[in-house]
Amino acid sequence: MSGLHGHGLVLGKFYPPHAGHHHLVRTAAARCERLTVLVCAASVESVSLEDRVAWMREVHPDVTVVGAVDDIPVDLHDPEVWAAHMAVFRAAVPDEVDAVFTSEAYGDELARRFGARHECVDVSRSRFPVSGTAVRKDPVGNWEFLAGPVRAALARRVVVLGAESTGTTTMARALTEHYRARGGVWAGTRCVDEYGRDFSERKLAELWAVRPGAEWAEVSFSSAEFPVIAREQRRREDAAARLGSPVLFCDTDAFATTIWHERYMGGPYPAAPEPAGQHLWLLTDHEGVAFEDDGLREGEELRPWMTARFRSELVRTGRDFRVLTGAHDDRLARAVAAVDELLGAGWHFTDPLPEKR
Image (cartoon, rainbow, N blue to C red; front, side):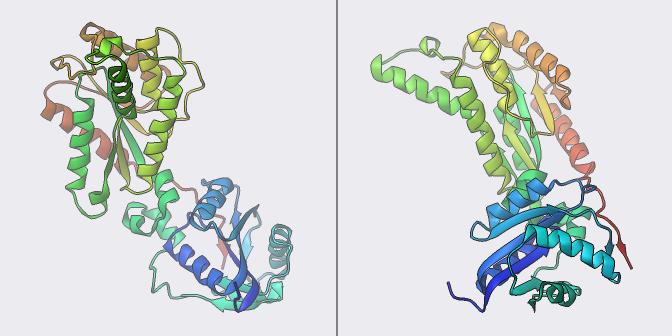
């Protein structure tokens, strides 16, 4: 690729990255033979440097993204402070820089200290009226400006789980439709279906290919299959969170898979559980819900035990959960109240280092 500049540089906190940042990077990349993006994070900030670098790399796979911890106070009028910052920048980006791209008033001075040309991009923020400060203050109001990996990190994930035939799928889908009906940013709310059911359907189909007319009770599982199910459930969840609204509903999760392993295999889960990325669990009680055999269910008598195991493990692991009881409408109302409470708590970002004016 031949560009106006050899080596370009974009520098920022990306706390968190938003559409304005991505426009700046894409503009710079189009004008340079190669581009480096330097992510600078202070230790006091609540989003890690590693996460920010990973997010920028995912959105911009064709540029070089590096990171540096910069805990030096900000004072644009102090030459010594400038020199200290430049030492951090130069250590992270030792190569000669031909052009610095910014949307900031300090861009001229930053470029001068790099011995480079300053390319100013959309200082007025007219194309993308957003800032990191605005996103931290109101992620929901600025959701449209966030790329997939940031949405995945910020989306509030709500899991519906419970014993067989207790209405988990019905509740997860009802919640999804409820929030979609609110419109606006919520219209994109998504639901992640239970991968374990897809897996089970394939197991039964494979058995039918050998023994036509075989019943679900004849399907056998191995312990090693449950971590596979859990990982795929988590992968699908992460993929949906990248595309949806500020809330994501999940019909079961990797945590629930550990209990299903106990139910089918009679022993403890054979691997380290998937890390928890969810925020709220809704446990559907078996009481008052008729058992319906849909061809992939058995063990109605085990439902009380399953409900108790889910509850005890939710308590033991310190997860935030609610038990849904009563008729469907009552359960839905309690679930919506719990989700609204979760969303109402908002998102907490620590303040970046203050800038001396």
